[in-house]
Length: 455
Image: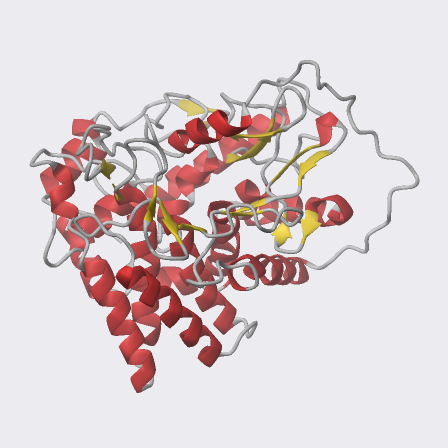
């Protein structure tokens, strides 16, 4: 099973992920009178700061040659993987640049220039039946294998990038001659993805194809997880569309996706990949809904707004209940999702945190990116993070993960896929910018209609 869990496999190999205790155990952090007093911001100021600081990840710390998003950025090791471009994270970057223009962090002319640079890079980068790989060498556009057999097209990462391309197309389509040309370039790029080829002539989409190993990984895209956007865009494609049966048998597992389970009084709505009755990591309810608006989004299986809201509230309530008695877990310190993590020996690892995989590590992106679903509750977490800004706020927003339980352990590092949803979802909460752009696209509407959605 892949989802973001496949990413965990890779990081386990290089970082030796571990459990909650062991030889590196540290005593819980206890606040004292010497801790700095931080003046509280208003909610508006808090959102402003978070968006502006997080934007720097995609602008100031982008990969130099391509202008696209690096997979990761470690401020203390700035040359680490400095040319590794992430396809999905670059899609989040496209959307973040649109926010940057709207918020006047950059001028429109600066945004157009950077977007042209990024799209020009992806035009010539390696593609496999239209799909880009998970990782690309920013120096020359060649595939960087994510694993031995994952050295070709990654359809889900490609879908995240295409979601951004659709927003770029809509944002600039009525602009100047240069802006219209940029919109046309974005439109052509996403329409070149051969979604139907990734079905293997079966009633499901498959994650990977390799020029050396074909479909050997053989992983079906099946929900509920982060892959809904892949089916929406596949149905929306004018030239490489899938049938409704592919969606029903693939994503919905012949209807077996529906769940009758509840937790803390909140219906789960759909079965989450991994099988937990507490729901999976919160990124399940973020990545597909950066452009796809879950408000009023329903089909024969779910009300997707209720699904995302309940998923978030279950995750939050689990942290409040705090069955493992971790320090500081509560109403202003919650949020479990995939991120960097703390190994048993105190070193940095990676894990898909969730109620069923709770290591005492909080990921700021979890609550921040859930702000459309739980606005007041997410803002409480943002204020908590800011009150601890001496430990948690770095050069590109809040750091990726921390644990008050282990003497306030912090990984002073960043990942594109965690920073992007923060700036995007705060904007969707405030103005609906990316939701409005994506949902007004004619092809997207056709795809939603084809699959039987109400929206």
